[in-house]
Image 1 (cartoon, rainbow, N blue to C red):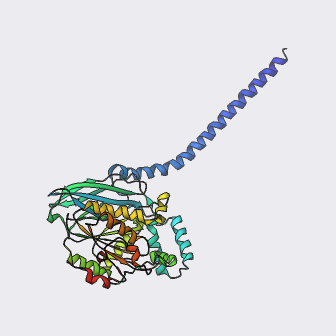
Image 2 (image 1 turned 60 degrees about the horizontal axis):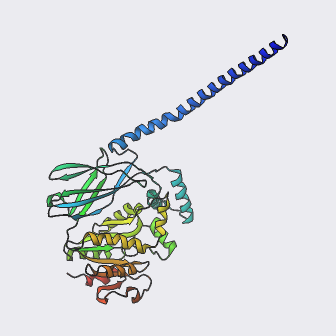
Image 3 (image 1 turned 90 degrees about the horizontal axis):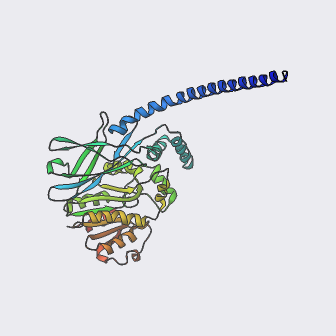
Length: 386
């Protein structure tokens, strides 16, 4: 037995040393993992610290942009208005690999060769490939009676969009051409916005965009995509003059663009219409996010969407009269006929640009004196009367 005990003792010793070796190796592995994690954690912490001021103070980061969309205010009483604010905060991601790959793929599809066309494509696609900033809030400043008023807006959603509603007295001296102007607070850059102060009475023009005031050729899908993404925008002849004559002929005339185009095209559309000389308008577009199912809304039937968007405007201004302008390429005739049935006292005229030889049956149910087809703006000039 004495010879057996040392053997047991040696086994225990081996087991003990083996365990210590494993513990030592484990400690080294943990130390390596910790050091490795620290290497990754450092830049992540710096990134988080860089973003913290934006989350806590509303400061707009240097790599972020804010775009405000023109909205329409409603009068609450003799002095006060409800002021809606709608904006979008995002990082442009100019050097995004995905964006470059998308541009390259579409460039091949469209067989682009000249740099000018490629530049237009990059500009049009950029808003679709941005990094939307969620849970950010923006502060704006409004000048009233010579004083700067600061307002903090609600935090942004996943798609970077944020909405706010302010209630305040509005005086004539606060406005520029009937608009209340504001800007996001930023020390170096200028992010402007405007709200159209629309009186309770007057005439409002609600207009579609594609193939109504801007040539798109929606019915020819190849031409549609080229006109949207790689060609300079072109206005339908004479439509600027129609809008300008409406503004001069009708009291308190206001303009609203209601379109199935996404907000990603807003800046390009707004710049185009201003350069063409169209009156300033509010914009009511589709709110989509490329990364989720809202993208499918671009391909949804426009009937319910447009009914809903236009009804919001009609209900906000029950005492105003409306002229609806659209085209026959999609569902504008059917949408406007339905709205005319629901709001016969508010809707005075319906003008439809006939792009596919539509017949009068598409306007069944609407008094003939209330609507007409047209090809160019010159066809409508005699229709604009006080």
